[in-house]
Length: 300
Length: 275
Image (cartoon, rainbow over all chains, first blue to last red; front, side):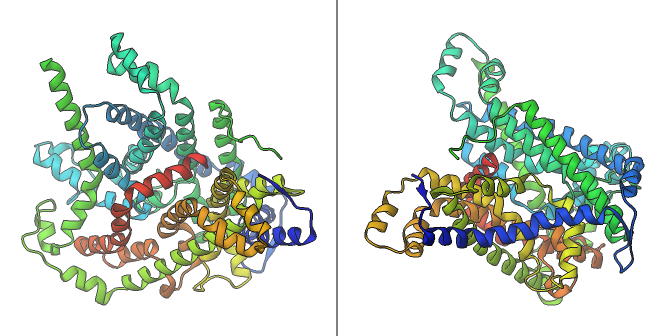
């Protein structure tokens, strides 16, 4: 049912209903984007002196090794998380959909739990776990006699990106499990019965039947994962603050530091616009690759 | 057959271990919070010898944690309430009326879901600062409501589109006013999706860190996530006390989660997939 706004009173009512949402949303989301564009053209340290410098900030950004290193870290984290989160979630979902796993509901509730915790808490919890003297990992390693393996996990620049991904993967496996299981539950069970009669093994069923049938949901999950990891900030801020050195620096943290530590407001704005473009390009690109018809058909 | 049985046991075992690892970090932090620093240093994994509540008493009496929790609670309740009402109004007219610019307005809102909020940190800070809107009790409500609207409007719009409008038509024939129809007929009908929106936004706002970090630097207005990072600065060495802080701030959300887990999981996933 769609009513046509014909009378003046109705039009006024529509306008009044939309006004608060439009006003707040425009002020919070749209005006800052325009602001970022404007500030990015200035050499500005936050004070009264603003010097117009055209596109110089962008030229600087293109040559800024630190920024691109941070971008590369975002990419690495994204790739590790796509495989870690969605890959593991798929395997577990396939296992959980079989008849012989007990306590399914409990597993689901417990597995989802970490994704409701704030990123700050997850960051702290895992920096305790990674702690050299008292952390769970080193305590377990020492208990089983692998003393040499115990190390200061968050202090090795060569492995830091992999290490910070562990909490991220831990936190979101359950989240993607629930998404994938919801998709799996819509598959007609008779397909599996027939495959079973034909002698297909569990692994074959998962890869040859389930995976193609839930392709769209996997696509959604991959997109969520990419978008989430392009903007990663809280976990890194708490666990490493970009360190050791700048080895775990990510784009959002770079902007934060450029603004509030170095006070380069103009340059940080250019960086923000850069992030905006890179994120949209990567999310959009993956959307095209996955080829999901994401806009539902509308009658207007 | 025996091989198959063993495989089943192994699979079940894998799951039990997996579920265990999902909660163990928090369980570990929970029981460690009852230890003294000396006890923790001696053996960080062992269970506490006695239930020592001194860390809890300390967190509640001589830290700012209770204050931070009140701030978070106020921000969360107010943001969720405003988001529900504002998004409901917009979602309703977008789903029920044809008018010029309807599609454009809808897409304008939806576009907001594509914008990474971290790209807006600097201009948001400058904009609110220039207008004197930082460091007030209402400061954080502004970005929370603004960024909560797109997904909420989308969910509400698509839900109301899916329910038939006969009741509203009948009400209109009976001479029921627009506002009364909206709040006495449509609002209750849409309550399932409004609950979903409330759940999604509750967790989003309670856990939000970045805006809380940059827009508020008055200690009396800090929220829980930022408060925790400050807590760390003050007690770097005292692990059990830090862990107590974490448990105290997590507890309200944790209790809510385990009571309403089914609804919360369904709601958050519905939001994610549709978004």
